[in-house]
Amino acid sequence: MRFFFKSGTYQTSVNVLIIPSWFLNRIKPMSYEHHCYICLFIHFLKLSTPLTKKFAYALRLGDLSLAGAKLSFTFANVTGFSVLNGLSGAMEPICGQAFGAKNHKLLHKTLVMSTSFLLLVSIPISFLWLNVDKILITCGQQNDISTVAKKYLIYLLPDLAVTSFLCPLKAYLSTQNVTIPIMLSSTLAVALHIPITMLLSLTKGLEVISMAYWITDLIIMILLAIYVMIVENRKGGEWKEGGWWEQGILDWVRLLKLCGPCCLTTCLEWWCYEILVLFTGRLPNAKQAVGIIAIVLNFDYLLFSVMLSLATCASVHVSNELGADSPAPAYRAAYVSLGLSIIFGFLGGSVMAWARGIRGPLFSHDKGIIRGVKKIMLLMALIVVVNFPLAVCGGIVRGTARPWLGIYANIGGFYLLALPLGVILAFKVHLGLVGLLTGFMVGVVICLALLLVFVARIDWVGEAKKAHMLACNQEEVADDRKNSSMATENGSC
Image 1 (spheres, rainbow, N blue to C red):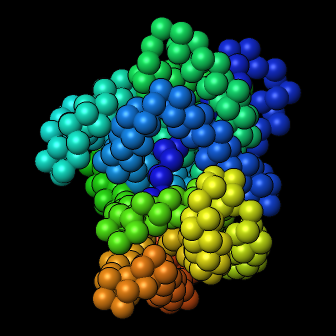
Image 2 (tube, helix red, strand yellow):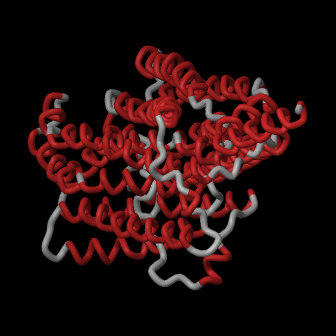
Image 3 (cartoon, rainbow, N blue to C red):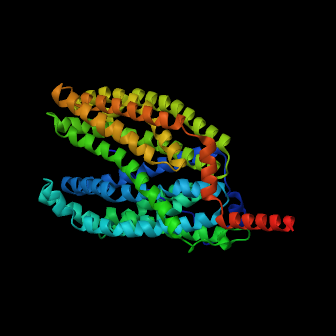
């Protein structure tokens, strides 16, 4: 059950109402290495303290509240935040290539279009959340748990609108290699979330968890929006270059073409983890098996933050270089990222294998669960080794504005092979949880092999020309053609 943590959740920002000029001058595009380090720090913060705080508070309220909170959190991510984040992923190739081509108008119009589209998508998601109790009861959940889950989601509804602004703002900044404000926001968010929760807990119950989410995100969104306006309106900024309200039909078509594949790529992989956990609940020793997989995946979330950072860096830098019509640097950025992912994959797998003996006792005193965790974490360590280059390959194809390649790989590796093979090994061969993860590992390997073939076959020169042509300022191209034709006419005279 890999939680898809929405971009911007638990992110906040520095007080940008009064920002010293020396600070603004220091926030410039940075090197690839610095970008990777900061992205790693951001994702690590995003996946750590607030999640633990949420479930710790729900646990204090009782078993029913904990069950309802976990169920609603999963439902919110499956139907809401994973979809919004997947759709906002279309901004990475467009804005990244636009930044490489120095087309700030395209950056501006894409920010407005993405925000508007996410707000529109949030409307049907809201109606889905309002009927979550009926949906869960129909799926076989208990009435009391379903009622608690609905109460949680009702108070979380404002976060859909906030996320619709926050995701595009974060993508807008990160594709320009401006990650220091996001890093500072993430750091401050961890500090703000706890006192907000404690303050609300004086008068509220379970709804504290939801309210703390969207109140914190609202603060973040406002601060980041003000930051963007101040930075781009200062002397030398790009605000006056326009493009904010100059969206055309072709702009919308290009964005929507990328939104669908980006969303499906994100959701297909994440939903596969959810299905894996559902099958775990069908095993003969379901209670023990679910406890084992929960402990193992809890550790995997921390390593997943490193995967996300490397994938984001690969996507941003590849798209930047392609937009600048620089195929050789784009090629180098892709393969350097891939090389780093292999190194980090072996490091992550080694850390997981080393921690397998101490992770279980931290969460349970059951000897069966402790033994199971020790055994399963060794198998999961092998999956982690493959998952790192898999995530980076996904970032590379996303940076080339061809995210549908990730869809083919995910469907082929996860759904046509991993899940069927895992079910056969678990239930027919009676290997249990080991069988499920073995099938999953085989599927991950096949998925990686498919993406490696796609990456190896990329025509970098052709992709660079295409990206530069799409991302460059069309008005300048038209002016150049006009001037060229006038010069030709004058020469003929």
